[in-house]
Image (tube, rainbow, N blue to C red; front, side):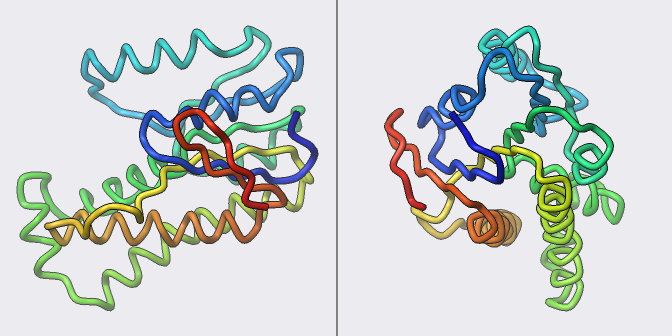
Length: 196
């Protein structure tokens, strides 16, 4: 059972991190499950994943499907706790939302190759500030919160600038949350390893 404060859970794809995060809460608690994997045009496989996740949740839990303004959600809704699943998708969606206001999706790689480090720094700051605001909201409200994220730093260096930028953003966001968390776990093949 998770205690008050912030708990960070990180792991690889299909490591069991989401199921472990859900098990940290009582099925009787009033929990807001924040699903950040919002897509306007989800494919069939993604719909199936979403349904599997929903089936595991308690009927008493509410779901918020959003990746923006999570700090406002936490500040405005005093519940028993929040489960943010996951930080990686939050960062991804914030990144593409911002970039696609500047260019079309088919020109994304060309656009990223053309912008300089200063503009990339501004984009990174904007996204990481959203993470900082979420952490500040948790601290201000003293809400019980679990944040789930993907560990992306154990693989090879990505081949494209787009994926390198995202990989770096994921790593920076993970470090912010890990530093702020009272408890942290690394989940490997369904086995949670306590980090702090």
